[in-house]
Length: 162
Image (tube, rainbow, N blue to C red; front, side, top):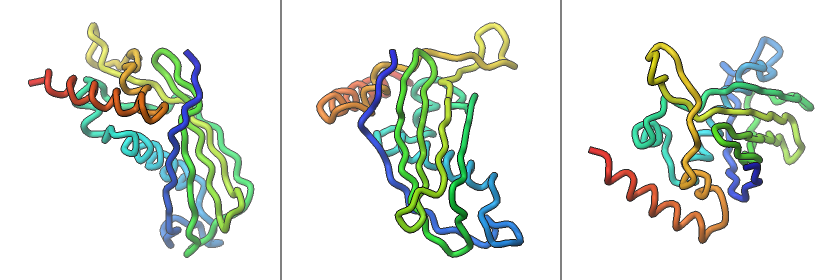
């Protein structure tokens, strides 16, 4: 079910003092917080806000199950960076997201995530279980025509819920 999408998102981030270590360089865990916010922004651009996605599809979230990052150039306090994000692969219940962070138009960091569409287990509510990503959600990230049709399907599925 692997499929490259064509919807991408650009998010501008201003580096704050609290994001940095004593050398005024972004502390590496902050990058992962940026990338998580960028994934949510990508879904929002596709027309699915995270809070509504959880409610509409009965999931607990889209947890990260694998992540790799390369830090190529430091970003520092007061820099303004741009993160470009896109989903590069859809599986049955997982998907890959690529984030590219640019500082002054130079690639400064790159991150690849694998996330899972997850719901509570029907047999053990203390556990989560992967769930098939709805076709209508995947289509929100494809060509504009398919995206418009999928948005209609998402709206219809929202109406079915009490």
